[in-house]
Image 1 (cartoon, rainbow, N blue to C red):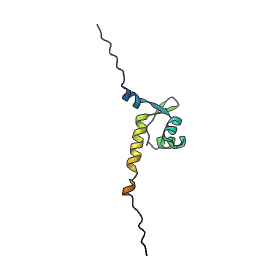
Image 2 (tube, helix red, strand yellow):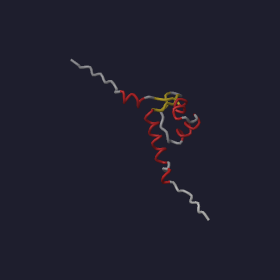
Image 3 (cartoon, one colour):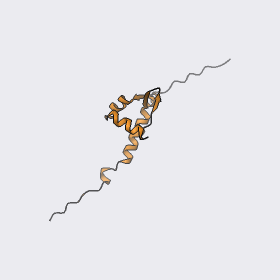
Image 4 (cartoon, rainbow, N blue to C red):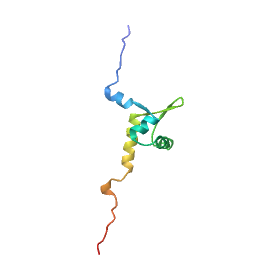
Length: 86
């Protein structure tokens, strides 16, 4: 006698498993498809290839955005030019 186990992914899990094509990812990030392909080629954005089709998970897009945010200095920490009056 074998028991059948059904595993249904939670809503949160499904949200992060959502996949985008290159044009969809570009639209989602509001950047060009060329830029998406460039960051994929540079290894900054992970993707999967299914045949000739390139897909990117929502989770990988969020990781890419987090990395971009870490690489950019915060405006408060940026050097400011001081203007002397005189």
